[in-house]
Image 1 (cartoon, helix red, strand yellow):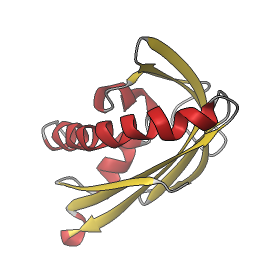
Image 2: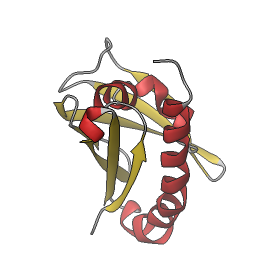
Image 3: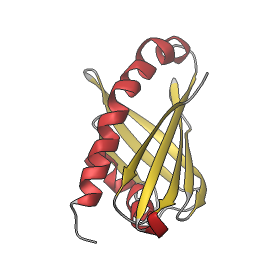
Image 4: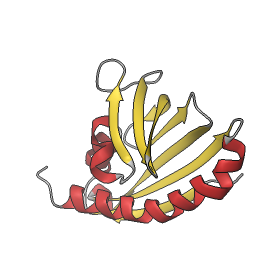
Length: 149
């Protein structure tokens, strides 16, 4: 399968953007389907940290344990779902623009289907994510550009 990838330019430094997007407690603020994101340990997250992310999928709330696999501040991060029929694989990359005063954020999301999840990924999950991702990035941009440093 191929990842769904989307980029957006944000008028904040890579350091500011990275600090915000890698703090899982902010996830419900900018992703429509995220109901909660609760670290299973101390903040800030580090490689190996786990986060319980609960998403609203239709009428159901679906919890997934995500694990941080890579962190390269302020450039990139990688998280992967550990359980459930649909396991997200999320990679983020931040490119500095205009001497580091602005950032280009690229999110790439793919899914590993297990059992029933094999059918759900192409039929339901990927179409939902393709629809939600542009809105999420616009919300991220708005929140970061209109909040205090």
